[in-house]
Image 1 (cartoon, rainbow, N blue to C red):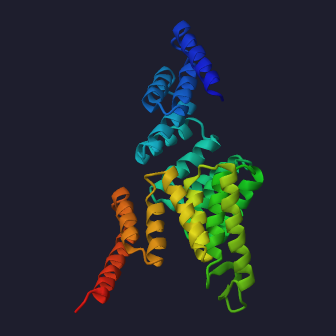
Image 2 (spheres, rainbow, N blue to C red; image 1 turned 90 degrees about the horizontal axis):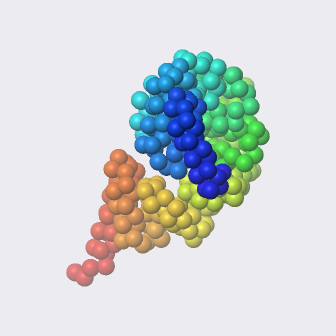
Image 3 (spheres, rainbow, N blue to C red; image 1 turned 60 degrees about the horizontal axis):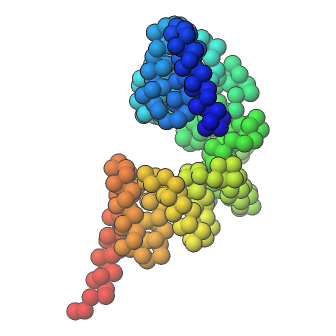
Length: 311
């Protein structure tokens, strides 16, 4: 919706509320418009008013939950999504959103169950298939993730996050010594993926990231992941460009800075690498890998200084 039309719609809903303050749908729709503009407090007030007027309005409970989810308050979001489901047990979108909140809390099993319920209720819900793929990937099942994500893309060909996550799953399968769960020998042991097949996965992963970026040119995660795929193939300059772009698009994106640190460290640019590792840690104080790599880089810098110092 164009900005001018958004303002027209907001004015219309506000006038409706003046005429009839008890018009529940107007409060809810106005809240959605505020949310689309990033005015979360105004949106929250609208959804709360809709719920006050009609406590059984499941859509308003779900919309209110989405505000808390966006703020990272997942326990509150989960409670409100559950209330929306209690009021409307056939609400497939809410099951998918509840699963996403559960996944954010690390509860992958319940998240998976929520996505599966959403798909059972609405088999054509692409976001639920995409979320299921993301959950399976996080659970260490890249083959299952690939199947779910391909289905999501089949349902919604313009789904950039699904392409990005499909690239991640394929990139894992492209790594050496990864075995497919679905391919087992007669003795029950995993069969390793052939070199040719791994190369095909690697190429398709890159194609997926590029497709995600064509659909959403400002997708920092797709840029960062494409950079990692370029690094896998020894294309350092391209990898650095991708991660620089990711960090520019999303300045608080710690993994992009950590990736830049590792790329610069490999090039012997240790001072620059240290600066990026520090930036990653400043953005995410729990980033264990960044701490570890920073320590390694300081050690290498010390060894380099010792070699170059005169006796």
